[in-house]
Image (cartoon, helix red, strand yellow):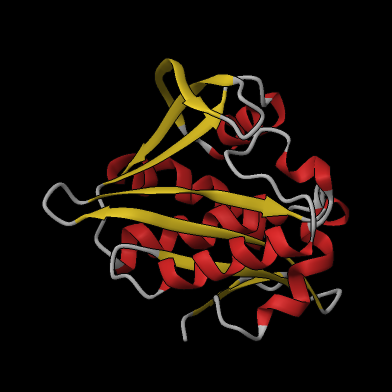
Amino acid sequence: METLSTKRFQLESLSEFHYEKLRDFALEKELWTYSTIKINNKEDFKDYFNQALLWSKQISHFVFVVYDIENDLYVGMTRLYGFDSKNKSIKLGFTWYATQAQGTGVNTHCKYLILNYAFENLSIERVELNADLRNERSIAAMKKIGFQQEGILRKHTYLPDGFKRDTIVFSILKEEWENEVKIVLERKIFI
């Protein structure tokens, strides 16, 4: 079981243990506003959770649960997926944090941990992240972390309500991580 941590937050590899710890937070409807997934009830979350468990068993997926050390509370999930060993690239996504954890620095800590894992442990050269173009909060957070906007895929993905969203694509390259992004994030987290 993989565990990554700063002094405030920890990423743990997903296991059955985490289901009960996350279920109530996952039922916060506003978490899924811009998501390709809708969680309306406990059954939806159970299906989502079981699918994430299946994904976590594939060599191309790394599914993590977010643990708030200070408050002794599990507050979200994130994952690396679509690992392309030939091109040394991977996608980062399916990230959500409980409403009460948002604005606490959780995203900065988690992105640092997962990006460091991708670049240092998996020898990745490019991490990609996609978001709904309407999700201004997520877009601002990605820019603040240091992701570079690559472009917009127009009318790219259907959402559960039938809306076809535009998808904004971001990435961080290994040299950007090593020369700037990692340094900036470490200053925010460790100083």
